[in-house]
Length: 326
Image 1 (cartoon, rainbow, N blue to C red):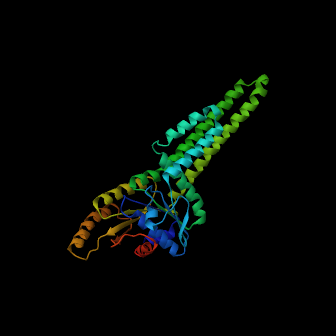
Image 2: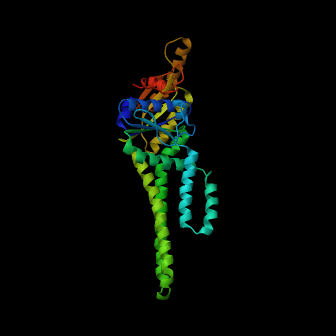
Image 3: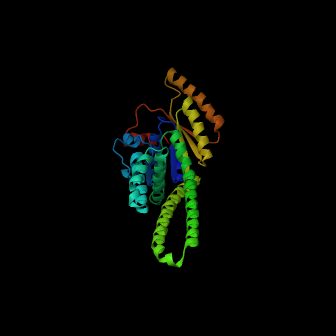
């Protein structure tokens, strides 16, 4: 089921409650698709850097080769915010007088810890990865942070696109008003004196619009890809326990509200129904929790992966795990 989905889509997002095995399942899916002959990029947006732990090697913010057909990268929120703020600061320095540079730097420093800054920076980085990655890879797999962060992240493309569009419209309205005022106040004696200043101001406004338009196109492109059901799908990974099941229902509801389709539920670490009284009772208890998914999400396909005896660490162990996805 999951591998069939990986063959159909270009973008796969994996989400769910922390600790349920999102990284293992998403990485195994990416590896299985690569082993089947596809070229795959595996991307982690989780600050915990679990991909590096899983593959038992250091993985950075640029794609690195894991094995034939599979590259991986970890988006670093701190580095992403640094790069984002440097780009904004550099643009503002070019647009504003030197006397204002100190204030700009102070504002940028305060903005670093502003609510939503990391999400906005990560979102812009995701948009860049998608824009370039779809040209180079058959499939991009995103291993996302725990549910609450992911739900906000998936809603952001629409919000940021609308917000940037609003800024552009206000900028254009201000430009038209300023031009109207200049026309009213212009006279032949002052024309030569103001021509150079007006040209500089118009160049500055043009560059502001260019920056805003570039961001708008990034967010709009990501929004369109996420909304395209033939291109993108979301997989929720969970454990057969009360809290992960309830969080799955909440996440599915938020994703649906954002126009993101959930096409698969992966119940990971499922207790076997044989092997002694304890495991049999545990399996029966898990079945009770999963009944709620049957009731609330009957149309979403579900796949169960049995609990393994050992941790999944390294490429060989992940190969073995990927064969369970079938």
